[in-house]
Image (cartoon, rainbow, N blue to C red; front, side):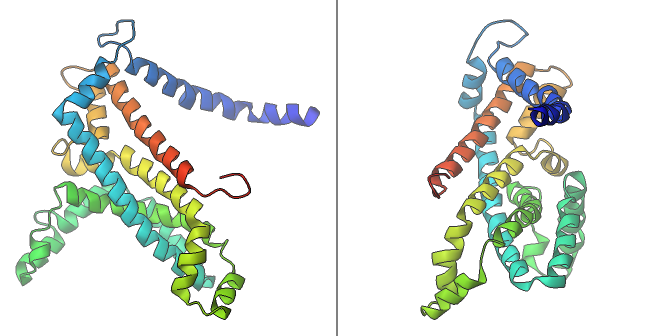
Length: 280
């Protein structure tokens, strides 16, 4: 009993911080999303009806979901190959690769957008090389578009996914590969029949993290395109930092919509994750 009291006492600061800066703000945001604009009391669905009935916000939802899903899939695919290479390499290669990953994973936001502008902007280094040497793809690279933004999202998705997948590869045993080889299987057989099914829970969990990371990303998108592309995080920020009017209730409703999509992604992951021993 004393140990339990000691643990609870030690956890008290953490629980208080979680309550003050996570649980209470989330509850307040959800409640305010269902309140009428102007600070009046009551319950209304007008904010959500306006979001799903207005072309601007429907397009923001479409763009955000598209870029989140595509960047997560592309990032996951590349990260899977990278994590596999690190797992098979091991030793000093793994240490060097992990150091590079930790460094690259912290390079995001405004500095990342600025780096892409320097490299692939209208007068960027790679753009000028493309123009001088007749490389059409580089000369007319569509950086200031949804596809250019997708490239930036993929950049910061890859190191995050790789860092999350590398520990999962530790569960792959050498004995399994040897058993498949003795039964006449090759590497493709092993990964399709054994490796990927074993890693599937980790892959799906990583995909959920990447989806949420891309859906909520704001700094890179705003620094690159500002309001020239409509995304949910950008439309959300407009409701709280507008120069003319602020719509905190409507902004809270947009935040609730984003939470809803994240919950759906987690629910789908939980649904398709295979059960093991009666548990997911």
